[in-house]
Length: 246
Image (spheres, rainbow, N blue to C red):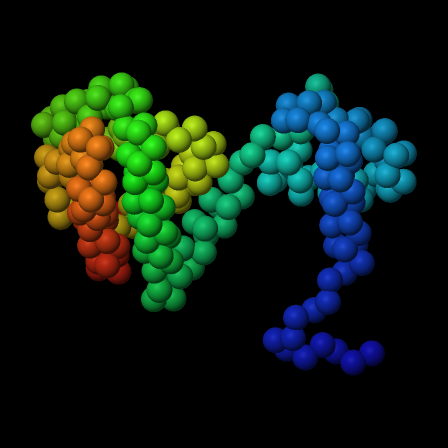
């Protein structure tokens, strides 16, 4: 048998293809039975019999589906239809951002660019739909952020909560999941960033400008304020290679 040439992608093994096939059949079963998130699934024994697959193939498929949140396996209780999770995406983006940094690239900067475009569009939608006054908790978070800034530093949790509340009126769970995934990747790598050029008070001021534009229902001002907020992040990302984490 001729050995595969270096660099040529090896064909998928029959075992890998079989596992993917079983995954598809499990997903089809969920759809055909109109199962919703949290609904119990057939037992492992029942699935082996119904799908006519080996226990090993089933377990490999279930493990892969569990990793992406399609199946939730609770040992001792059973299997359930999982809720949407972007945990696997976060792990992959974080890993590849670290690789890109080692190779002289900056995938984290690209990710932040996507987040900025998304947030600018989302805040515009909140204002356009007349939803800018539907988050009273945002007032409390703004006051909390300014108090933290006056005390010496804005916490990541407060910053994250501010951005979550901006778009909460849209009632879009995918938006929340996606933005949280961006946050998780950024926070996992933030210690690799150069120190912020802006003081805590300046950081709070950038958020205050976003807040004021939202409350004033001023779409152009909100876009300008959002760009100013992200400008500081872009500066830190541009200096990423200059900083060596301790």
